[in-house]
Image 1 (cartoon, rainbow, N blue to C red):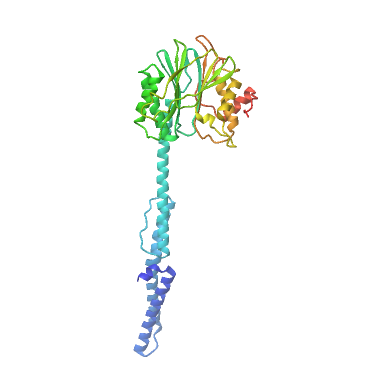
Image 2 (cartoon, rainbow, N blue to C red; image 1 turned 90 degrees about the vertical axis):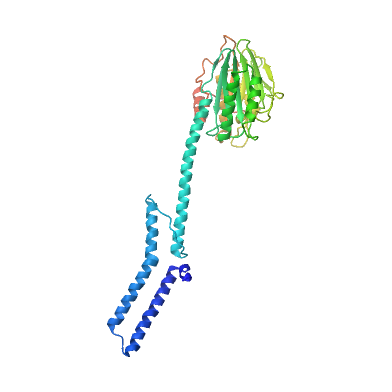
Length: 402
């Protein structure tokens, strides 16, 4: 009977019909010759009814009942009720329908599981993003002798850029860092570095020792492929002295008010987490400042940002923008107009990396920057639409540098 389970339903119905027709014919033939007379109409009709009943019975159990079972489960699936998988060894049309139903429901279950997992991960990402947002300073600080404005805009929910302002005694530590990659791994490294720096700032009074010990603890806790570039300033309010330590980060830009030109200083050093001991590879150096001078810290998401033609914003464009706006504005105006210049340059190109920009102006003990008061001390980078709206209100006719 194996050939029957593998044949199509129509072929099997034909087989049943042929077999039962032969049996019926054989019975009628036997009755006819056994009595040597014509078969009575009643006998023939009875045999025919028996044949039809038997034929319908076979059709019900072989076709109608299995189809009804499949349709019941399909209806349950479509109405959102609990359904069951269909187990059968049949290879005919009903077997194909049952197999198709099982595959569809398996796909639905997988999609449903993926959706639940996606919702769980999204919820966790939102929590992690909020935790990271809480770690970054929400506002620029008030520091005696300095005017500081910082803005940042992550490329994804969890960014790799980090910055902070930490005042301990007479020292204020200002740093910007950039972790390799994006997402959760970068956010975890960023959080670890932030925690370590806060810990060692309580122990050491110079940036060199803070970063040497941060690197030592970080290296033992992250993968070899993960590291973080960083540039840290240390301002001493008593001596009015600024120093910096570079750990493989971008250049330090110093705008000199005396000649309205930018001075470019290589940060030097090696990224945190690359070697077990960086004590011989980094150094704390002094940055002489006069009133009105501005130090610019940034992440590579700014200089490597692209426009629709694939061109990068570049360090040269950043320097040109600073030299164009610094004579007219204080740190708040510099950051705002550089952000506007960057927005005009990038147009609608998707942001591929986190962007952070910090302007630190030396105003002296009783000095004041060219900005009366920053419009907002928030460290959140304004959206492109907000920047465009501000530019329209201000009547800003500046063009993106060529």
